[in-house]
Length: 139
Image (cartoon, rainbow, N blue to C red; front, top):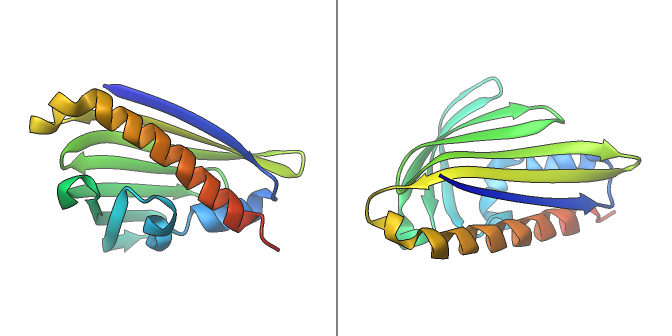
């Protein structure tokens, strides 16, 4: 398993950060490793979806659970990587802390590129948090 942990403080209230980060239909705008998202089933705060990722336009299947104003729990169940991405947000005195933890295993031929992929995901996560921060900090 590959574990990646990244955090960022955003100078915006939790509600504003949540509204940006939890807009799962706009995920490709922030997470450039995500090319497209197709929701297959929405049941309350749970979304089953098909995601096309940047690596060779590969398809992943995911289950997303939104825990309002607390976390986004993404389980990657099929595709070239399996595991989870959990985004947790918390109020820190008027600002918001966002923590992202990936626990993934690369499958098939992709497992040969674990080190390179880990670096890309880590940088992509930092870049995504930068874009989320920029939108959340807008008035």
